[in-house]
Image (cartoon, rainbow, N blue to C red; front, side, top):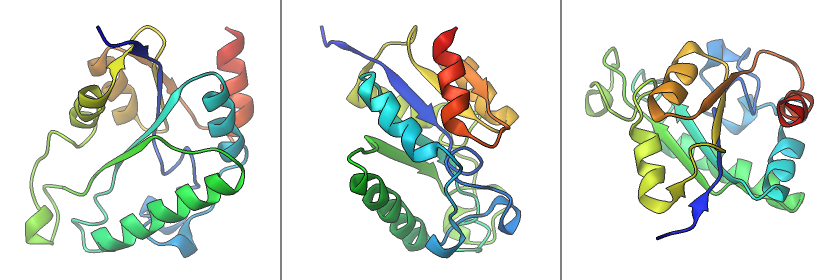
Length: 172
């Protein structure tokens, strides 16, 4: 039996970075602005032995706002920035699909798209997830639905500082 793994599932846009830019469609490094306390939060959660897994809908790809390559570049940038402060993300999952997309390849429904739990199921292939101690932080109702369907706690984030938000959760 594999050891159980605590995972902090984090949405990207609106949790790690501001989604107030470009109507929330963030596909370029130039548009990515870290939310206050987000890097510190990742470092803190890692110190508490959490795996950090980003789960993010990126319909901007299907909508033609940016390419899948742009998203990979942005995710590489995020990892590089975190490495500079001695921390890391364990995995990034994203869904490029949307039924209203204009890019044919990505114009479809997908089990990866939150509130579906395809990204959770992908993480489950790697880790024996400790559902009792794992959680999701998101800024959309779909993030909370994702958490509920996955059977983990969901925390709705709509504040300025992710670190103070997470510190309050851990005081509960």
